[in-house]
Amino acid sequence: MSPGDLPTVRLDQWLWAARFFKTRSLAAQAVEGGKVELNGEKAKRGKPVRPGDTLRIRLGAFESRVTVTALAARRGSAAVAATLYREEEASRSARERLAELHRLATRIGGGLPKGRPTKRERREMDRWKTRDP
Image (tube, rainbow, N blue to C red):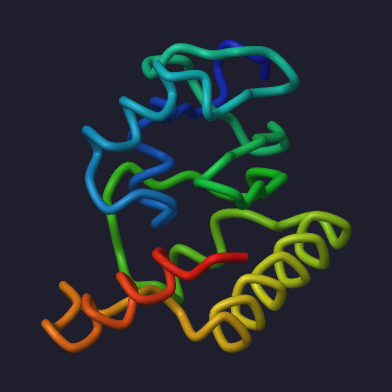
């Protein structure tokens, strides 16, 4: 069996089926935007993916390095999607560490303000702004 005879799936279709992106168009936009690398090279959305290929996927601040273990052209359950790839241990630990830092930062900082300030809060801010150092 030659490499051309192996079954393949489009990159954007596989990313969608593996549940890295919610829609196939979002997967295609990420590939076109350079957020996905296939075997260390920038790829186009129609590039064929084969078992054994390595992917680097950047989603916001998070980066995943995965090896394709199986192919799927259709989106299935999360349990099925988890069998389509194997994430590198270094990638997993870095992603979990970054998620923990994000979680702690929102807990310590109190998160984002909730809506517009009230009239009382605006007056307090004005008092702080007009104070002499």
